[in-house]
Image (tube, rainbow, N blue to C red; front, side, top):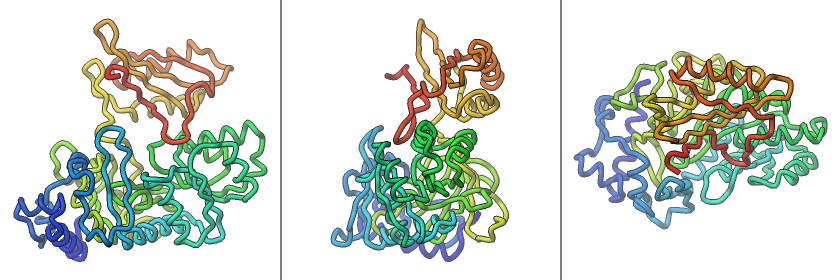
Length: 411
């Protein structure tokens, strides 16, 4: 998917704004002697930006618009280092709301819906992003935020919420709680808009069937507005990305070179109209591919596949490179187990050990199931893990994101 002439003009507008503001990234471009790009080939010569670059700009080194035009900041969690501060102008906030409202519309959500928003508010972009889009659409926002499941379910029933916005982990927790209480007939949900973490097909099916709703994947990250920059349509053939606001590339994560449409690689995003903190060729570390051809829905927006994982998800165990998705795909072949799993890696007596915890009901032989799963995993990754089978509900549920890989070697 090559950048268009119209998109190149917008990129040049952002380059000029960055250089004029003398912001962190503007200095980087000025030092490289880049003032504009004329062709797709020129564009590919622009330097990448990385999260570490953004951290170095802390606190407000990314601010490109005049301070009096900045109306809000958001921030990454900062759990793995210095947080990233992203300033927004009023236009940025409005553009983001426009994209998010478009996501709701693609999911078949209207101003007659009541949207229960469970992701967190505050510096994180999630809750307020879902709410801005909801208000732009004209629907009724039920801004619950995370946690307090008892209150969530009460409001869901009393207000007749029709749309659930959440992480997949919390959607699963709510599904199980609704079933435990036997209140499914009192719940009026018809759609779920799910984001913030990768989730398996088994988990999707569990939530969809448990709640009796259609599910939609929403994409986004704090550095690039937040959630709402893309969503799958009713045909579920990938997520449409709003290319009037963003230009998206897929590159080989090792070489940095573009890969052909249809091949998996790392998502790189350029913001085309962002004022507060424009980003040029930002490496997200998310893995996906551009889906070639037209979508049956007729929309012309480009599509990417569901997020397969991250380039930094890889675990090195016993000299073998292992991705969580490999384990997930093996577990999906066992109908006896739930969608929940946990991988724990430790280093004992001079060697690495991988333990995989899975859940099942009490009607199967735990030892036999453990052995069969271990054999399948070995055939996929080359060594035998220790598989621990536990009863359904034993593994932790989360109101935010679930930690599925715990590497105790570096604890």
